[in-house]
Image (cartoon, rainbow over all chains, first blue to last red; front, side):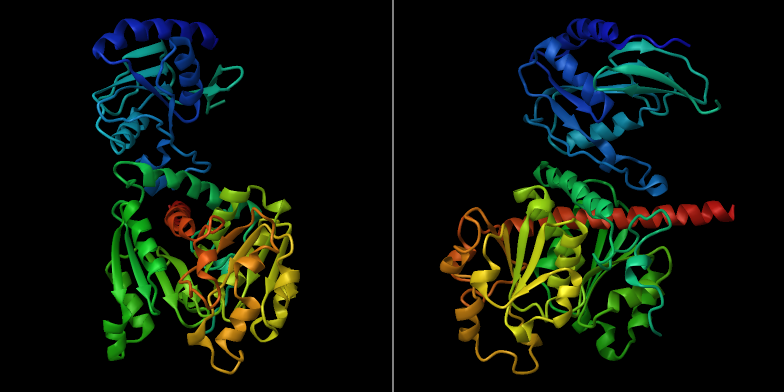
Length: 168
Length: 334
């Protein structure tokens, strides 16, 4: 399978954000990237949209639901939300949405900083294998993969998508 | 029963991750750095509106303090609570131990309540190690200070404070001053500093309060403050442990203060941007001048604040290492 280029996907996502996410709230949104891939993408989207609020970064390792089975993730990055979450319109950005569990964790962490007015979700790749009722508002590409296949985003320069096949 | 596995081996699982935290001795640079990096991420939790993460939700942490402590016990309690664990504080003086129950019987009872972690402070050196060897294998044991042996979480919060202010350890010159003989903190600090490849560690104090083996740990010994403090980046003062002094090791407190108390004049021997640290509780006018404890270079209260994040890191890493070990054992049996 040939993987798509990231740059054109980001362009179409930026215009979709303006079309579908901006009208959801009258206040200009703030953006939060989820470590690590989501943070790279958010940095580019934040710049191309010219958002005024500083970019937020979040590491959801402390909010994961698999500590009991997998333990603490190595190399946890500090979270940094340099704006007041209370009453804010927040756009969460992640690289790949699959089960929806990462976003569940991200929402929990976000709410520990305050009560946002509304939260929208942006993902570069949507793999429709949801285990939770969470859907992206904007996505770059939707892909159907075999159960043993995964998608990985490498970066930050250049941003490239790779298919990982655990059978191979 | 005598301990059979040395603490620095007992505290790691087969993957080399922490499963107990008993000593800073023998820990790799990578693992020491991982503790500091993990603590860095926990610092931001203290800035959230809800100062809590759900990492240890449903785990039971038991604080077993056989010796008085305020700072260490409360920051361990806060750390466990900010990780969403349930915390049990056992007050030993009013517990059944004072009715003659043995230590192991008490621990077995706590195990029977499905505890996941013991945080132990004990006046006997090696007590947390002994407990770690005899508790059931799912329980993680954290040393909160044992006798004159070790106080590893204090040492790690000191390392965190130093890194936060001074960055790379390799170029630093660190002096530890005062009652080194009775100090479990000093030993753990020297091991951690050596493990983090610090430029130089010095210990300064009267001959009677510096154990002769400290040079073998990699520290340079000084008996004179002017020489010992020359050009250091970090001054760590130790508390004069009057309650542990059994023989006449000092002529008098005032004599000690005159020679080794950190005054503004003596601090001037260090680099102008040197930071002043103290594990607390401080004895103003005994080992440190009041003005120095409150001066701009003093980071004593920041140490307390960082202590919460560092203890959160150690608690979650040990619980994680213990969990992985259990998963490996269960996987092996299957």
